[in-house]
Image (cartoon, rainbow, N blue to C red):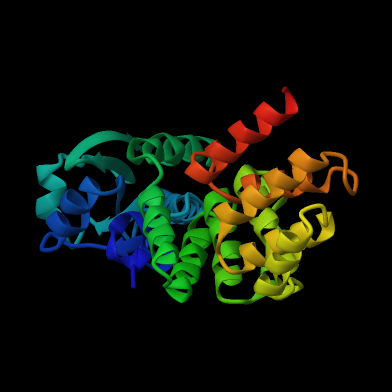
Length: 302
C-alpha cells in the first residue's frame, strides 16, 4: 500500500516539525529539501524572541499542510553548524530548497509576515507531492485495491482538506467498496469551497448511477424484452441500467443513444439525461465519453 509517510513532502503533521543536530543536519535539511522546502529555526533557550517566534512558525508550518517542513536547531548545542552558516544573532530563520538556502530573516516577525514567508517558501515545492499521491491512489482504485485507495485519499485530505480530486476519489473508493450510504454522506458534506467542483459532481453522478444499478432488473430478461419489441422504451432504459450495473458502460450508452434516436422526448428526455449523467461520471477524455457525446450531438443537430 502507498503511504504518504514515504516522502518528506507528505509526512503526517506530527513529522513536519523536528529538532535536529549537526549529526543529522544533512539528512534533516539538505537531503529533505530536495523533496520539499525546509525552514530552519536557529534558536536558544535563553532567547526571549525565540520563544514567541518558534510557536508561531510551527503553527504556520502545520497550517501549510505538508508543503513545507521545519527543523529547529539549538545554537548552544550545535555551535559548529551555526558558525558554518554565519548565524550572528537569533532568532534566525533560513529556508532551504534543493539543498540550498533560498530565503530567510532575522528577528521576530508579526504573524502576517510569518504567513507570507511560509506561503512564499511553500510555493517553491509546488503541491508538496499531493499530485503524485492522488495519482497513486487512482491507480490503486483502478486495480481494485479500493481499501488502500480510500486510506490514501483520506491521508491526502488530512494534508489538504479541500482537495477536490482526493475528496471525489474518496467518495468513489467507498462506492467501489459497496458503501453507498457512506459515499452519499461524504458527498452531502463536501466542504463548501469544493462542493461544486467537477470531481465532486462526477462522484455524485456515480452515486446516482450506483443507486439505479441497485434497482436494475435481470439483464437477460430485459435484453429479450427489447429484442421482442424495440419500441418498449422503458425496457430499453432499464436494460441500459442493467448493463451499467454489470460494468458494460459502452453497451449501456449505445442502448440509451438508440432510445434517444427512437424518441428523444420520451419520459421528459430521460435518455439524454441519463447519458449526461454517465458522461459526467466518467473522465472527460474517456473514449466512451468522446464517442457518446459525438453521436449524441449528431442526433441532436441532425
